[in-house]
Image (cartoon, rainbow, N blue to C red; front, top):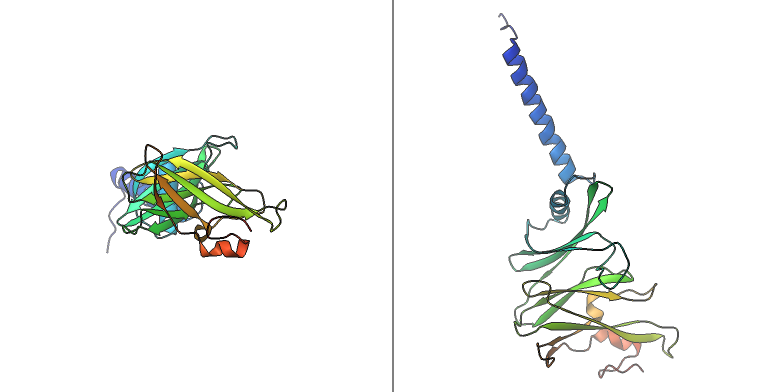
Length: 221
């Protein structure tokens, strides 16, 4: 059986086909593995794929300044608030020189019967809490949480942080806690206030507070 001669046109088509195949393989590797990627959207897609979330609808994008100040939501360079069906998520990604790196993602299922649902995004000293809000009249959310404090008799004190709505019924609230302390969603009390400052909702005092010596009234014993 004779082989057809390789013409210049056929050679060009073969080179083009191999080049496109290589590009597709490289794109899959970039999205699926932890390689630096060229755009923030690629890093977002890679992070969602790793955590089996989405693809979610982006309802807010927040860029962080370089300084550690009150405007910073955590140690990453960009945060996305995502929604997929009845689930909400916060995804962070970081810049590495001219490239981007995939990051982490945490998610919570919305419960329409609850006015406020908190989700700790980071547990660093400088972190943030995503609060999903089901009450359209709530304009500001306050977080109250216990942290370690060597200066008190029982080694604990209550701190608070608050903020306005970030986007579409979601509040992303930055907080600061002393180094060595950690924050978890089941140790948070959340309060919601209307535009006039009146309290509309207050979650029950978390059961975990008893281990810190905090009474139901919020007093540190």
